[in-house]
Image (tube, rainbow, N blue to C red; front, side, top):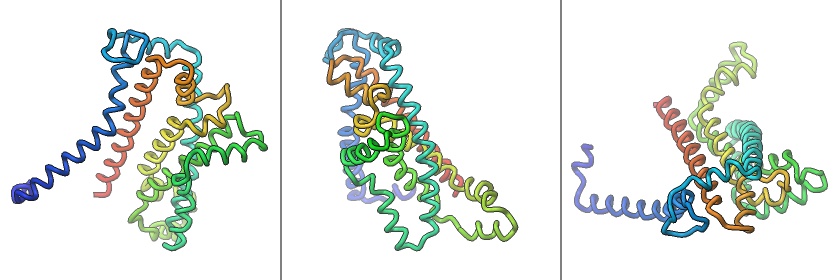
Length: 272
């Protein structure tokens, strides 16, 4: 507040320009998403403005249609399993990286984060040709393993950030006092990285819950996830039911992001 009082006129102009630019970028990213929300309440059968009327017709349709219920169930099962597996592997990878020399950590970090740089279509084709001979295509296990490949890097990034500034001498001190490695991990290390682990699990679940390309190759007809069911519906017949599902996905994603942000702020308050 005091610093704002002493801002020069040029500083105020630059600040206003920055806020304006950020508002434009935010609007560019968010407004197309917000445009579909009113269409989900359209009483008519077409995706068009103005609305024919307000109705919950399309929400009732996706709630009662068996294909949408099965797709939601598959997404939740695959998402939760992916979050569990990716969080376990990503946390262990982040802990291992934190103990390595800086140069080795950088090289291995690039390798572990490579699924973020490689186009998803290439990953999808690769895992399909790898899993098909192993009879993992069209199975829950194959889909969970492929989604874990995409989600684990996010866990590594978040947990690594939570380990910044952590003094590893505390682990040695615990061991010197007779605590077993498991007890040191549970009583000392895990409470320190728990917010990062929880945030990483949320990002892993979101990665799986919104993923479409890999699911096209590996899901099969009985394991269609929600995004894949939306994709098939768009190809067959475009109805406002798609916008109702999209609205639910946006609300779920926003809620999970809010939870991740709450966890981050909680961690910041602990470290202050």
